Image (tube, rainbow, N blue to C red; front, side):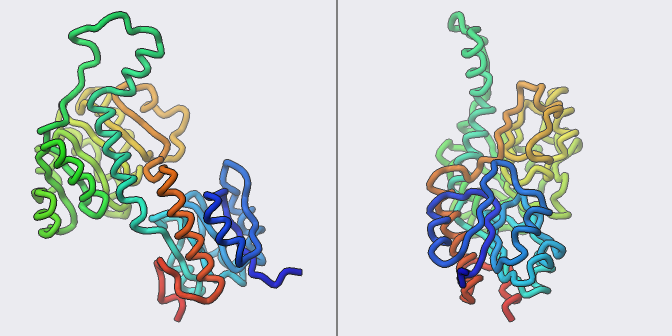
Length: 326
């Protein structure tokens, strides 16, 4: 029998990460496209010292109790809302994540969404594929200019600031809101701090880059859409529940705002019967903010490094709860 520690990896991650783990541990890798049920994870980790999880996996106290040897949960993500960190700390289980790796990649995706909805790229592609393009027309698929418009950034952390740098290249006026001002970032990006209501009134494009917590749940709803006005656009690449989707549907249907572009939705995947799917003035992609080959490989290396450190008794390179080691 192998004396190497056992780990469970809840989905196929890029091979570079699997190769790292294979050098030091006995791996059990879930091979299916859909995530394993919680009961399956509990069964698979019963004799494991490490778990490499995804955001789709609920890792709570009951799951950790099913693995008495568990030392580390390494999340293949920047966020860790899926993990009960307090429960992990109470059990001496270290939790790792992959911060900092996807800033530029996610900002690229958010900027792509902004450009796509402003210039009606998705609608145009559908129009051509439906064989409707007959001639050049002065009024065909008119969109909105991005250059010299005003962009309002909700959440001015690394990704929000990366969006500001992209906006500067389009000579946009940049305004932002956050829990507190960031004077140094203002100097670097030329951004102007505003309270949320003022930002919504001033902005042609509102892009969300905030965390999801009790204060930001449904931060943007019917009232906020009214403040934005009929010529504005919403872009969300943070977390779906920051936006009230029922209110968003009504705002788009009634043209309270002009359009929206989403990388995230309240329920993922978005339900087949979601009324948002009936609208042309919304672009929705399947949570692909970090989905570049380069970034996903970096995430795999980081997640593998956290997992390996945890099962070998070394400090995690990126640890959410270092106090669990004490």
